[in-house]
Amino acid sequence: MRAVLKPKVIVIDANASCQLRCPTCPTTSKGYPPVVGCGYLKSADFKKLLIDNPIIRSVSLNSRGEMFLNPELLSIVEWAFANDIPLSSDSGVNLNHAGAGVLEALVRCRFRSLCCSIDGATPETYCIYRIGGDFNRVIYHVRQINQYKRIYKSKYPRLIWQFVVFGHNEHELPMAKQLAAELGMGFQAKMSWDSSYSPIRNKGFVMREAGWQAGTREEFASLKGANYMRGVCFSLWHSPRINWDGKVLGCCWNSWQEFGGNVFKDGYIACANGENIDYARRMLLGRSPHRDDLPCSACKLYSEMRQSGRYLTESEIFGSLLYRLARAIYRGVRS
Ligand code: SF4
Ligand code: SF4
Image (tube, rainbow, N blue to C red):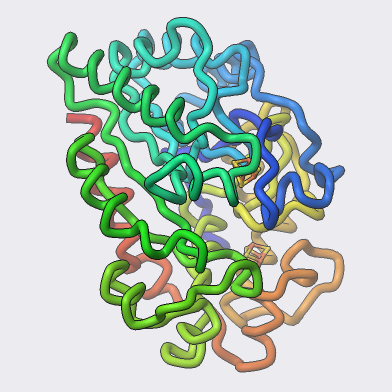
């Protein structure tokens, strides 16, 4: 008999559209993928999901697009707070737009953490990649959040400055780290999704400033013998990724095929334990033969595993820093 997964955390897209046009964005650069669409999580669906599935005790509003473009975000944030459901958003918001009252509500309603994608420390450099974005407006929004945090005497939301490092912005890493510290933000430098776009120029400098052991994802793979993004697959076990319309996509990479089921109609636990997603887990552990009809079969990560024979292991899935951190945060936010 197989074990039934009962995740207490759900990762659901708040919004799949975006107002910016970052050149290598997987969501907007080739048009919105049909399975994902370009809609947003409705407040009524969100409330019904939480009411129908009381096992869910924490929600991560990660988005393929921009969370703040969800016109019902205020209602979602306030309802979750009133019902003791901690919210966070750790996949990166561009923070160029904030609807009336939303930033104040994030602080008042103890939204736990917000990761802000800011790839530069000056307006000129920032808008090279974040096309259509305005650096000064983003920093203004961060300062507004900080102002509300002072008014409410709250440490929430914890703010993270996420800086995707390119050749055109690497020289601003020290300035960005300093500004992040002044703004009370944590700082994390992230490797670019596509190392052929504006590749880094001064590798030694970047590795020192970013605290990396390798200069690109490819170098990381040859150094560690594993893909830089291998951890993406862990979400199939920890909290399968849900699209804004309830479809089960499993992870943040999959935008081409659903696993089956809809959390709004079928329930979260039933969807997290559907036949296809359960089989995919066994495939990724190397315990079941390849099946062509599953999303992982069209994925570079799984094909690398098949080629190398380096399938996932339970110890890396459940011993990962990410998982332990998520559990620690979950315990922390419940206290
Ligand atoms: S801000 Fe994010 S979602 Fe929007 S275009 Fe850029 S990478 Fe894509
Ligand atoms: S193999 Fe690809 S599609 Fe499957 S869980 Fe991993 S990243 Fe997602």
